[in-house]
Image (cartoon, rainbow, N blue to C red; front, side, top):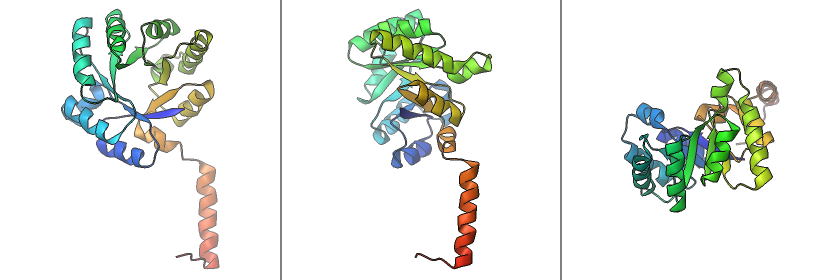
Length: 217
């Protein structure tokens, strides 16, 4: 499973990329707002750091304007994936932009039916939101499983990009189900390395090393 990091924080992206921990980046208007910077400037800088897909979201609601915005965003770099919402206008924009050879990430997916429509519209990625469904006491991971089954049944090439990832457990569960990609905040990706038994074992090793006077350098 590929890891995308869900942030517009340049320092966080640079750190994770330097460790080989990410294969791409996802952003949205809320993350751009948090960065306090111009979207075109931020996307340009991210694309210079990361060579994998970098999602940049349109802000229009009308398909024709979405297409215009999508073309402008895609012109930033070859690895831009234009992010459009899962609405009829978004699907229209997806069809046009994907037909022009641009990567398209259809976002705000909350049902298998929506995912099926996105695949038929030629989406490169479909972004089902796990955490937001969980917030409503609906199993977000079950949606990932349903989409995986449908896409496998018919050979759709659209990649499942699990989004709204809240925990390290979400990451491993998405991997077991067969999501192609999971996008998560930097803190969640880092939390995957944490385990109480690792901490306990390391503490014991350090104490024993000190007691034995072990020095390597």
